[in-house]
Image (cartoon, rainbow, N blue to C red; front, side, top):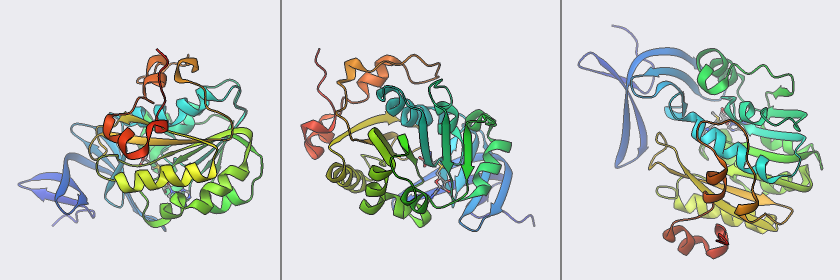
Length: 294
Ligand code: SAM
């Protein structure tokens, strides 16, 4: 009897990963092959080759990113803040072990240093080796890898960064502290006077309370806060939120300029992503998105 990894089950000779999203919602992906599996000191790490989404990174049974749609999230969490900052040179990425965000940040000629602080070295090793569509097998000399807790790393830096990207997993386990006010306060201190941060703030559909709590917490620490969205098919409910916290007034969306090569992001999307659906405006208040001036 072949031992099946955790979270994988065999149904009539076919392998399936079932994400146990919530009591009444399970999401299953048909799997061709378990490409990588390791129990790291922090979590169970797998790379699975799936029929519909290609290779996918799975942490503790939760799909983090896939070769098919990982670029949507990685482009939107990276290009929005880096297009807003006038001339980013130093970027901090907390989490982001699949290297997708770092790969996008490396597209900016002005960027001189990218500190990637990932608590689990196993994730970087597996992503570079088995998820090249996401990681790009990143070898840019500007990227410096720190295998450490992002909470502690942020505390040790003051006025050191122009943009901070918190590309965390869900607020459980080691990522829980990345959703706390004290952490956001340490990011404010780690940013320069014209700096801004962004974090993934979960699903407006299934995790509305966490999304709102994140938006309000960042709003209490940063003078300018805005939420934007993108649709990521492999994230529960599709619609996903990102929250910006900025020390400088955020430009109106029409003034955002974007000229990088990307699969999903373009200048129009950089501007329209701040237009929020009515239920989100209702929940967060009219200033959560941005008023399009035309
Ligand atoms: N794009 C994915 C998403 O939205 O779910 C997540 C990208 S990446 C896989 C998330 C990373 O955050 C994981 O590799 C995890 O190990 C890392 N992480 C969790 N807690 C952390 C912490 N306290 N410090 C640094 N990295 C952390």
